[in-house]
Length: 331
Image (tube, rainbow, N blue to C red; front, side, top):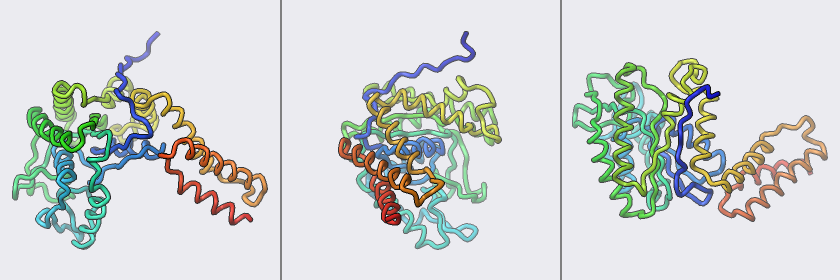
């Protein structure tokens, strides 16, 4: 007996492993998935411009990285005691223009050559609705709670997204010919747009990605995070209290399906070892001065050294240093 309709997911090819370097861009769902990738010690950079929702702002941010160019101060605006950039999320905002600039410069410097180095780009679209700054018609990455009268709001056309990404991807492959691209659509509904408008928005994103897959079948792939929540987990048990965001159980399930589709069997086995070390590191002993705890810490160090020796691309330096610091205090 089948109690739900299962979403069929094709395994991505080639599958991801710990030697890959990933860049994750997009909505808050991208941040959720990216954080989990970082937790399992995958080598990845996450949202260097902060959370971005619409395809055009993501494309513009990728072009900024591609050109290795800093924004101008024309992009900065002061509002309610903070300085903001129209191209960056509010996480970069600061009480002074100099502080805002430092935050932006730090992120861009850290990602200077990232597009030449990554093996896979993961992009999550959140909404096809954009806000254009009336002063110059630019699509902004974030409105920073500025008055609505300063913006024009509209829904992108499928052709706009496809044209923008067709040119962008061609340029990316010029500097990184082996780059793979994995698109997703965030399962988080934008109910403030209205439920019908949200469906139109998500449909626009899905149609655009489908066209990009058809244009670049060997380099562009899709993971159905949206379909997993809306079709397979179509029950409010799988939503948070706001009835919009997925619950922890739903995110765990989507992550499980993502892992099965995107990771090789060797990678899945290594993930288990990484999780074991992480759980051991989080253990808080009843008797931290005991010999038993000393042996426990030594066991963690041994596991880290064994794994690092076999897989030198793992970075357990912080965990190992923490264990050694605790051991030194006990001796």
